[in-house]
Length: 213
Ligand code: AMP
Image 1 (spheres, rainbow, N blue to C red):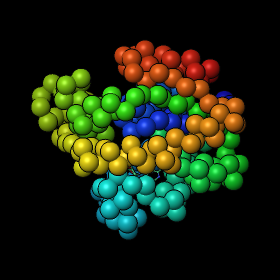
Image 2: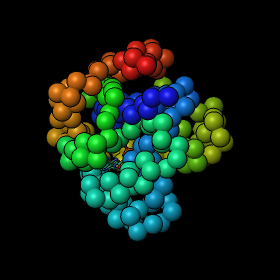
Image 3: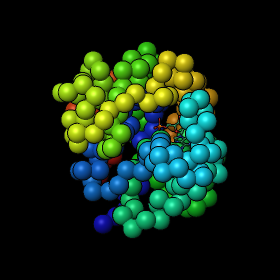
């Protein structure tokens, strides 16, 4: 099988995580989410996790050296041999260049476009499972039992960085540092933009179309 190296690009709250999980099931390649890897490192209390903490809680980017170390380790794992879906990485030009420098050829970058007002609505109502990472929303996709994950029965919580002030900071960081990657990958000829505002199912179909697999 030809390797599939894909990137889901887009602002926080665009649905990268949710849509990646569906791609994992359908394509049989892993999702590599730097946000999830960082949260796991924090939970495990590793040195890297402790160093990342303050940046994450403020909605700032964690330094590239830390993130690149995590990504490198993850991509070296066996299940990533046939490809992977990068979710939340790269987030600035230096990270994108790090992939290029390692001759990691990305086949497709899907840019999920969602307007700011919608992102704020989504992020401020988001609840996430502590155990399996599944994502819910208090209004749009509530859990059947409040505070309990529908998928695994774990406890759901509001991420510290999903609060109003930190959301603004994250959107600012996105605009300044991540958004320029749209042009970066357009120039490489691998970018496709998908409207991320519709029904989850319709967005997923549009993503599959954009991937042209
Ligand atoms: P996410 O779960 O993708 O929204 O990421 C949560 C937080 O983790 C971000 O606000 C950053 O502080 C940090 N983070 C995740 N991915 C990266 C990355 N590629 N580079 C730097 N920081 C990151």
